[in-house]
Image (cartoon, rainbow, N blue to C red; front, side):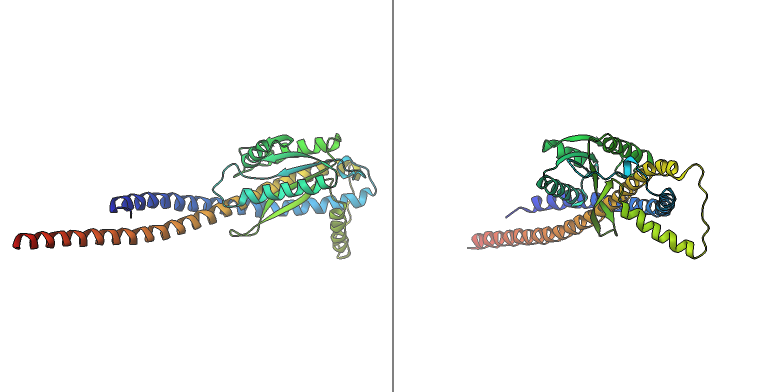
Length: 298
């Protein structure tokens, strides 16, 4: 049985650890609120971008643009997992990496080669450790991504797609549902899905029937669409980065809250054991005193 001093030392150590986990929980909570505000501010822009693309696509008719081209034979698939630069966030990073590896096995089962792009140190370190074909990685902005970060990633994957190095691009990230729930999402980033534009075209037609005016495009719709498609890719990646940032803070807040709760339960258990050990020591001392007194009187 551990001594009272050993138990005191463990209680003191766990108490200090609980202070750290509580502080990290508060920091993650504050950052989560800021991340949610950024997502809410960005969503209207993304929705209007889709509406504009749908309207221009309808006006342009059948056009052949590199980012819309869907190839008949898919030989190489690019997978882009979005992870964090740090841990201590429960299963946040592990579930994205696990889903990405499952997607890799699915594609390889169809006879396709897989090329990796990644964001966050957790993904890049895992892929390098497994000796995967990692074309490019980005780190240092997982908690507070900027639009310029999304632009850099979008430029790299778009160039790989248009040059024919890859035939399709998937992005895997944690979509933010709530502070307690993050949903692993797999989206086909490139080529840009035609059904997405068709769905938005249907919504655009409904608005036209309600009296929304038609537009006169200058320059030609084809040229406008060619400029909008790269911006759409950047916007979708920026949305994924923001969703992942909010999910990271929510997962870290939950993980630190659970750690603080577990530390409190362990402190209670150790305190009970320490009180029992102290009581046993006191009882032993009393017995020794009584035995000594009996020996003297005897």
